[in-house]
Structure formats: structure tokens, C-alpha cells
Image (tube, rainbow, N blue to C red; front, side, top):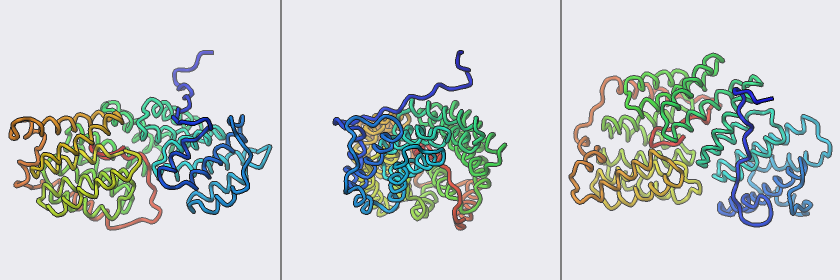
Length: 444
């Protein structure tokens, strides 16, 4: 019987490159690079045991060694419970459904722990194990698509996000179904297809509203706001930002990221450098996720240059480079580096601008980030032109003409006040979705 057009094809496994004869050596490589050898060894052993327990043992598999318990005692406390659960459950030769679900959940938590540290290959390996053991849970397929998008594996990401949406709808899991739509929207936006991205985010907003998922409705409105900003649709963007703020409510974690995006918008569109710099400075207390932190530093570097805060500019220039060099994964780096390149150019530091833009271009090409490629190339072209004051220079470094005439309209001032109020209150355990997509020079 032919497959229905409504049912996406079952995705292929995400291929993970590695060197060496033993399976899953990429786990050891990921954590050796992070200086977390014990954690890498614990996850490597656990992953091999899961595969040997559920399916054919991997080639070259060996029995668990006597020092396995000692290794678990020495791993990070956030990872240890997952590895202990796996060690205990994998002793059952004939697992029931509850055991399978628990094993998959332990693999999932270990994957999230690895992802937080930038070990994306390891996260994918663990998520595949979770999805194979318990495929009825659409969370695993969704997270495979989400992590694949972070790794710039766009075809894999699209396939797994579509599959996650199908599995979630089939089981009535409307939260994951909505997350998958948002993930597809962010994927197409990252690839530069704004009309297709908008359609997916509109679908996510409608589904979230229909099912009473307020946080995910806020995420969809947030993403639509970002798309409107990217398309130059000022008034709709401001209204979408207000609606997103209302959906989230005071103290929600996404308020801080939305504030970051809108501050960037005021800076980039209107030259509101001082207000933007104040917002970015306040946000340093709240935004800590690696790709978002490096982007925040990049944004503040540019805003400080425009506001004439030269000491802050120098400090943020250095701290942005430190974060770029420290983070193994390069998500958000091209965006941050283009921002500090613009900041350097605004102060007439052309060599610095060219250097940062060249580094940004290398990262953007590696990750196939079309928008960042164009911006980095335009900065390099303007800086290396023979006449510094030519038309290209004025177009690329537009901040230079606006640095002495900063003013905001009333709509912007009202929204700044709304953000100030929303950022004061913190709600304990406020839900947070991973579907956010920071503005163009942002991370999705």
C-alpha cells in the first residue's frame, strides 16, 4: 500500500563522523576536548551498554569493567543519576514497557546534559538511543531535529522535526506538535526563507492558542515578531512584541531574550544606542546560555561603540573573543562577530572590523548561515575598499551617521517601560521553551 501524503517518511539516522575502530568514539573525543574525560568515559560505556541491551551488541563490545562504579562516583553530579539509572535498569534481560520508558528517559536526560556543554554529537547519539528504545515519545524525535539544526545539519533537522510533529499529533501530544512547528519555522528562517518560516510560526501560534499553551503561543508571537523585524515591518513587529510579552507574563525567562531582540532592533533600525546599551547591560545578569551569552556580548559591544562608551566597548570586545575561543560549538559566533565588527567600524577601527568580519565569514560558511555570510562579506568589502567614505562604507556602517542624533519614538519608549516592568518580577519555575529565535544577528 502506498504511504499517505500526510505521513512523512521515517527519518534516517543522523550520521556522526568519528575516527577509530570502536563505536561511539566521538563521545570520548567530545569530552576529552572539554576536559571531562571521566564523564565521557561514563557516557561512552552507558551508550554501548544500551545498544548491546536493546538490539545487537556493537562490534568490539566488551563486558563492563570493574572500575565502572568508581567512574560513576567521580562524574558530574548532574550526570550521575542518569548513568546510575542506566546501570541498574540495563541488568534486566526481559524489560517491560515501564523499564523501556525509564531507560529512554535516562538517555534523554544525559543527552540534555551533554548538549548544555556543547557536546552535540554525544547528545545526538543518546537521543537516537532514547528514540529507538521508546519511539512513542515524540520528545526524542523533536530534540533530534532541534540539535541537528544547531549542528547546521538542516536536511536531518527538517526530517526529524516533521516526524516529531506527525508522531505528536498522532498521540495527542499538542505541546511537542507545536514545538516541532516552531522548530521548522526557525529552521527555515535560519536558512533565509522568511515566507516559509512565517507560515510555520503562524501554524504554531494557532495550534498553541487552540490548545491553551500560553508559553508556546508567546514563543510563536516572539518568532513572528523577529520575522517582521527582519522584513522591515516596524509597526507589526512592535504589536507582536506586546502580544508576546502579554502571553509570557512578568518574570518569564523568555522576557529577557525578547528584550534583547527588541534592544537590538532599536539599535539597528533607529540608532538608539544608549537605550539599547542600558538594556544589554541589564541583561548580563540574566542570560547565561553559551550561544545567547556570546551574542549578548557582541550586541553590547556594538551598542557601546554607538553610545560612545569606549571603556565598555573595549571590555566587551575582549570578553566576546574570550567566549568565542572558549566555546567548542560555534553556534551564534558569526552573529556576535559581525556585531563587534560593526562596533569597531563605528569607531573607525578598520583593521579590527576587517579581522572580526573575516572570522565571522569563516564560521558562517562552515555553518551555511546565508544571512551572516552576506553581512560579513559586506563589512569586509566596505573596509577594504580604497575610499573609506564611499557609498558602501556609509551603507554598511550606517551607525556612524546616527551616533549624534539618537532619539526614540513614543511607541518604542512605551515598550521599553513595559520591558522594565516585566523584568523586575521573577516567577519561580516559569516554563521556558527552546523554540526562541534571536533576532537576525541572533541564534535560533
